Length: 201
Image (cartoon, rainbow, N blue to C red; front, side, top):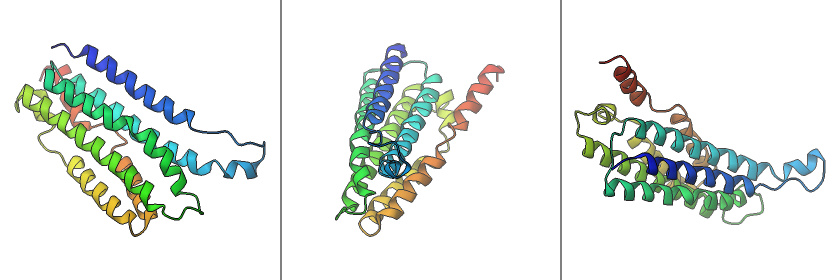
């Protein structure tokens, strides 16, 4: 199957996810710096989630660049990824409340935010592994993902962050930021394989 339609659809969904998140941001009611403090928590949550969506879009783009073809299972795996990613605006909106001082149980939104990130990550790795299986371990995809450190490390950190939220939600938020920092630069393994192909190696 040709991958182009799946790529175009995925790009559109990622764009909609970002649009939904930014529409949730509310401008201060008065033109003062004091009023700006009231929107700092939602803005910080938006920035973190925007970073995550941008990371997934970048890595999804790189992943499909070296994908030659897809099948029905890959299409469903991709839809699974988009489903979990589409929940990020919802959990981001809930996370806003966790950063407000008068919330009695801030750990609950932080846990659910972490779960949305965890299942999005699991879905991405499922899609990645299905594509490697489809193309073979000796393919460009297989070579690119032969050694994967950031993937398993991210999953472990998400689980630690979710568990930490029950004790100290602030620690969880720091861990979520650390994982985002790990993935800020698109996967260099894929860029390396693409470079080899361009030079005819």
